[in-house]
Amino acid sequence: MLAPGSTIGILGGGQLGRMLAVAAAQLGFKVHIYAPDAESVAAEVTAHHSQAAWDDEPRLAAFAAACDAATFEFENVPVDTVRFLSGHVAIRPGARGLEIAQDRLAEKHFVASIGGRPAPFASVPDRAALDVALADIGTPAILKTVRMGYDGKGQARLAAPADADTAWETIGRHAAILEGFVGFDHEFSVIMVRGIDGETRFWDSSVNVHIDGILSTASLPPPQIVRDQQDQARAMMANIAAELDYVGVLTGEFFATDDGPVFNEMAPRVHNSGHWTIEGAETSQFENHIRAIAGLPLGSTATRALPVVMQNLIGADIAQIPALLADENCHVHHYSKTEVRPGRKLGHATWVGTDPA
Image 1 (cartoon, rainbow, N blue to C red):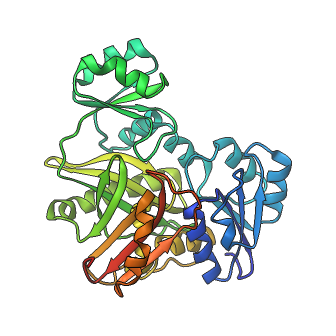
Image 2 (cartoon, rainbow, N blue to C red; image 1 turned 90 degrees about the horizontal axis):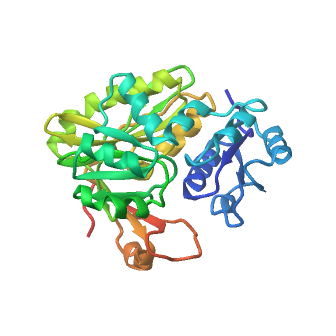
């Protein structure tokens, strides 16, 4: 159990690291950010910041020596970086969950191997394999790069086999996975936290709306079909966490279908669809992640009031902040990013116990 005054290292310098750092400070911890980027909105609110490459082992060793425990804020931190650090400092969650989440094909095989139900899928290592996969999976389908890509990046939709060439070029001719289209009513998240002792808690599931592949809103209560499938999806995520001996916040994204929940993907970290928990839950996902990796008792995940709506502020949406602040029921978060561009998440707004004005 970490004592107040201990230092928690965070790999990554974005808004998730920023919100984790604020939660850590509230519990009496110092935070040290490690990231290669010159701009770090997380480092703005922390005591220490190391700007260095992910493979700079002397700098990583110095970072580890300055920390009492470490974690990461996004899933594209190199697995080798986490493995190296694990020989110098306790890093939670560990490398295995990160490695699986970074490889969409490995992720699907892993989930299926422990009884989960992903969408139909096939490996596409090259262009010729795409034709074979299309014959097996059919269309409509989605072609996704095996590695990297988020918020709709690294993906291409195929309405018919004739779209294969265009789709292959769209994803940059990288190794890919073809996923069969799933007819669904809603998309929803299961966000859980697991402690060092294996204790597991879940937040209520939000229904998520995406625009152009990017999360737009997360809201509660979700429709009845999501509530009916929440327990089954939770059981799937609990199995994943137990198999990985996971510590911290883990997120699963699901499709609510007529045949039950279908696993879409997992994120071994705090999640955009859980930002509502800062004001809308007794303990936020950020605080409980810090509690978990510090070996502290987990906090209540109960929802404080309904309805809850979290709206992302993307690109030019950030100009809405003055109007949002005029709404006394709106909680506004600005991520302090300097460059405004389309598709970039720059902040979010949350309403608890009332709908947006």
